[in-house]
Length: 486
Image (cartoon, rainbow, N blue to C red; front, side, top):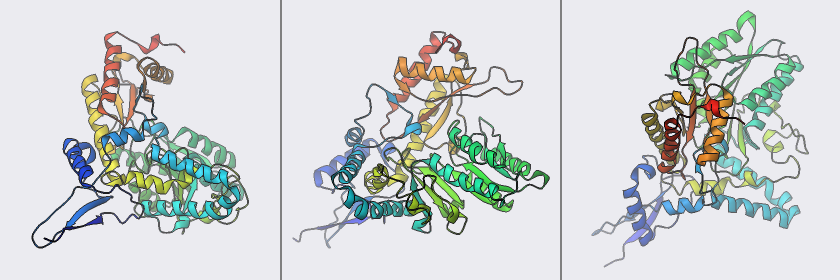
C-alpha cells in the first residue's frame, strides 16, 4: 500500500501566517479542545492554516488544524498579575510573551551594533511592518501608511496641517471643524491647541447615551454639520471616532463619511484608537482622508505604536511629523521612520504579531468575532444580575460594552465614578473603568453609573462573575458612593 501524502493548504494568503505543524498528537489535542470550547475558539471566517488530506484512490485522511490551546494562551499572558480580574483591555491593551520576546530581540540588535542597525536594518524592517498593515487595512499604497507612537500623535499630525491652513490663509477664520462630543479627551485638547488657537470654530456634536440605534447618531451628525455650515461657513474638517472610548459605542462611520462627502466637507479624519483588532477596518470601504488606530490596544503590540493612513489622492502630501528630524520633506511615512535616537522596536514587531494572531482560528477576524460574542454574553449576564441595561444595542458594541450599574449605588458625579473604580481595584482587585452619565431633564431614578467591560483572548468568564459578585455585595451592604472619600 502506498503511503498517504499530506499537504498543508493555507486558507489565508497572508504570508506572515505561522502555525505549529499538525502532528498527530497535537492534532488530536486540538480536536478535543475545539470540541469542548467551540463557542470561544470557532469562527466561520478563515485566516490561518488548515491541514487537508491528499488521498490516494482508496483512502481519505484528514487532520484538524492545530490552533493555539487554552494553556498556551495562559502561558502567553502569564506576566499578567493573577490576583486581578483584568477586564479593561480597552485602556492599555495587552501584549503576549512571544511578541515581547521579539521586541526584546529588536532592542538587543540595536544595542549590539547601532551603526549596522540604523543603516541596514531599521528602515527596511519598518517598511515591512507598514506593508503588512497596508494589506490588513486594504489601503492602496504602502506610502499611505505611516507608523507613529499612538493615535494622539496621529491626531496632532492631522490637526497641525489644519492649523497651518488657517494661519496661512487657505482657510478663513471662523471656518468650522466638527467633532463628536464623545471624542477622546487628548484629541479634544489637540483641537483646542491647534484649531481654536488658529482661528477655527469648533463644533461639538452632542450624541445620545444610552444609544438605541445608529440612526440616532446619523441624525445628530447631520444637525451638527448644518450648524457648522451656518452663516456661510465652510466645514474644513470632520473629526469622527470609529469607536468612542467612554461611553463605548461603535459609530456608523461609513454613513457619516458619505454624508460628509455629500455636504462638501473638505477632509474627514477618523480617530479609531480602538480600531484594528476590534472592528472591521477597510480603507477603501470607509473612504476617509485620514484614519488612525493604535496597534497596542486590540492588535497585541507592545506600547506604543499606531498607524496613520493618509489617502494618497488627498492632502496627505502636506502632512509632517511634529518632531522634525533629518527626513523632513521626504513624506510622512519616511519622516516617521526616524525622529531621532529612540526605541523603534514596537514598530518592528508587526510580523511577529501576525504570527501570533494566526495561531487562532480565523486569525484576527476570528479573534474579533469571538471577543464581541463573549463580551455581549458577559454584559447580558451582568444586566440580568443587576437589573439594569446595556448602553447600546449589541450590534453597536465592539469588544467592549457599557453595562449599567444598580441605581442604589448613587453614582452622582464623575468624582463618584472615579472613587468607585478605585474601590473595585483596591478592595476587590478588579480593573475596570467607570462612567458617570448625567441624568436628563426631568429624569428620576435613572441609571447614572456604568462600567465598561472589555473581552480579550486571555479573559475568562469567572472574572466577570467576580465583578457581578462585588457589585452585588456592595448593594447588599447598603453601600453609597457618597460614603467614599479620596
